Figure: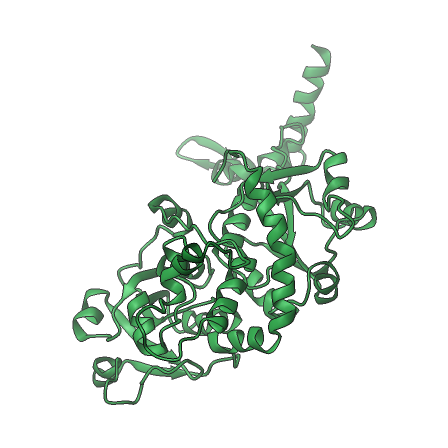
Length: 424
């Protein structure tokens, strides 16, 4: 009891030792110090050092690494799941040299892969030139310098050339957490689609040569099955669900006075060029609405083997981008006045680098926006298109074919031994 009384006397000393300025208002004596406490209750702790302060909770920081080559919605969903296991997500992007040694040549450069990962809305920090395997030195650096609490990876095995587990040390340290692999897509699968595109290019418009998109979006290749042979790459079994779209969506619409910017396109093989033009577009307003063309529209304007990715796959990739607020899944080719009024669009933009789209032709899809004076051409920061990526695959066809053949065995083992993993 004596110690409590001492504390009270000390607290009173803070109020009386030169801190009070008495004033009389209507017969009531008010201390300026007490008045200050009433008006600014947050300052209470400065007067009463014995009052309990709430300690700020340390954020849980999680780490996930990867090559992120030919980045797709599966990568984005993995990053979303990893972010849900902590408060801050740090992502390591493996160097070009490490990828070449462990897997074969990457399609995208380190700089391009860094742009892609940094643009994913669930990523808080990015580390360039991360090692393919987490050795003890790098693991300690993650724990001590980057304050990482847990290292995250999918349920599919990640093996080094010698057959050992790339995450063995993290598991041994008890700092490893596992997430569910996203079914229906992989970089190997996408490269396989493009290789198949090159191999099966038709010499005529014969209807028996189905587009790649049709073969893969339906989950099987009729030609491969009819011959009883494998294409060398597992066929995609992408099963779009409304829940996945909700998970990727922001869930917020534009404000009543928002300056809404609209940009449209195929956004096939979503790449760094797409990211940079979306970033530029978003800077021109408060809300970025992105129109994603249907598979049929893309095929009509770009050719039989396009798009490589189907509509839902392309939509998820765009939705994962931090610069995008909303998408129109299956946007019309022509941006009509009615559409502009419906979505309250303030500005329609288009980049300088794009596939054949007839912007200035007779079938100008932006004619209404131009007549309304709300159309703008913006400079594309990167000179890269979907065709650019396909040409890279064609130019190094043999190397990518070997890379896929090497990877397909591990893919086969994964699916043969696959069990259900809870999560999303």
